[in-house]
Image (cartoon, one colour):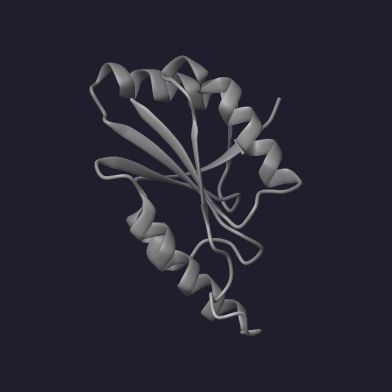
Length: 127
């Protein structure tokens, strides 16, 4: 099973910690692929949050590897411990799921279209 993380912009701070934890926890499934997606509106101009979020969302959806489930990392929901998350990945691998792509938004969060298309929305809890 292929596991990837799509990050809006260069991951820093808490987002970087989440990716490091996923690298450790998902190692049994192979190397975690990190895909950096341009953050913001993409035109370099200062825009409102909705414009930036929408532009990022389109870039996210275009870059998700084919056949991969989309898991939105958003803390608007209850937390899932990283060990429980990995147990779910193991179950998915045994069930023949091709891949999982974790979607990690920038400062304004994930676009509504991304959340609507996500197979799952999770908030990872780091140990």
